[in-house]
Length: 151
Image 1 (cartoon, rainbow, N blue to C red):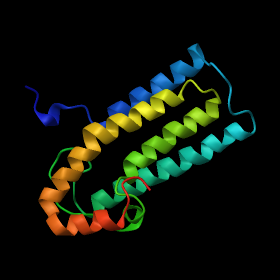
Image 2: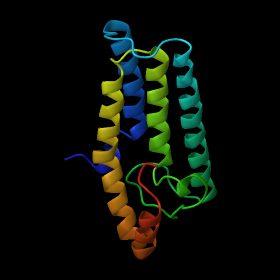
Image 3: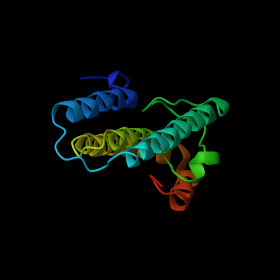
């Protein structure tokens, strides 16, 4: 049986989703749902997503805790971008994927955006939240009551 540390980390799913989104658009563009210049709004989503990821990563470093899924957390971060989302890095990844999909304009990529969202929620977020609840108890529960999972 695999050790949970051997499980691919979320960035692997993110990069795979980027590749699949691109291939879906190039090979099966189906319907164009966003046209130029509106496709440029995808860049805005991508910038917001990248910013969320960089800020969250910086906070993990400041608080000297791990960014890797399933590793023991040494701190519960609830300030800055963690005040608007319990999962700003995953939210950032979803926004980047959505931004790329908007930039491409076709409907084809969106299935992979939703697939990524489902997989991350089911196989990472739910487990991570359970681990944080065990680690930080009432403090984490209070945080969960104040801040939504996504936004």
